[in-house]
Length: 264
Picture 1: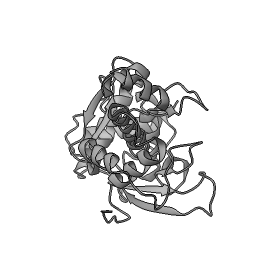
Picture 2 (picture 1 turned 135 degrees about the vertical axis):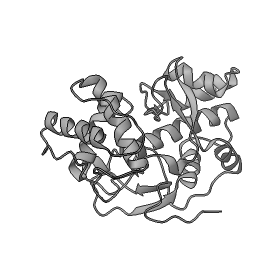
Picture 3 (picture 1 turned 45 degrees about the horizontal axis):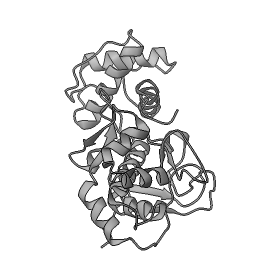
């Protein structure tokens, strides 16, 4: 059963059915779980060893959540989360059938993603088929071979991405930080959006020590305003101490760069 999805639901994946700059391509609003099932069914074979399917599903979910978390396309001025073009992202086919075992496997792990120690966010997990194309990431056909040799899903993941990769779990997919909240964050603001900015500024401060670290308590006080003002000065923004639209995306872009959670 396909779940409904509103345009503002964080667990919604906005799929651009074409290459990024094709303005004629349709944007589809798809529930995250349904999107993953479609991609897994489109990218690999349902007849494969289940350990290979699990490993590929984890890579696909982490890839997708990285695009969501880093706002990869929105930071480039697009109004979608991900494309259906395999030259840029993952294969997604509007209206395709979902295989029964894929449906079951995704349901069992759909809040999981891949991380490294010290980085809680989903890692960008590149992959390719391993026959027509090779890459610095998971080989789909190679994962099927390893599964046949007795490798578990996490052993397959570590074979391709390194021994420090591990499976993380989100409390809920809708908890993945999403886009600009639509209003300025300033002294007196509270909530998850403030906490997100505080956490990102603290990570940026490790590379730019002039930025003072703050308590990530979700309360926008004078210390947070001061950290924002310093960030704005370093990155040539008006030093208002307020997180407006340009500051939000500048913090997001710098955070993605210093934490190295996205595509190089």
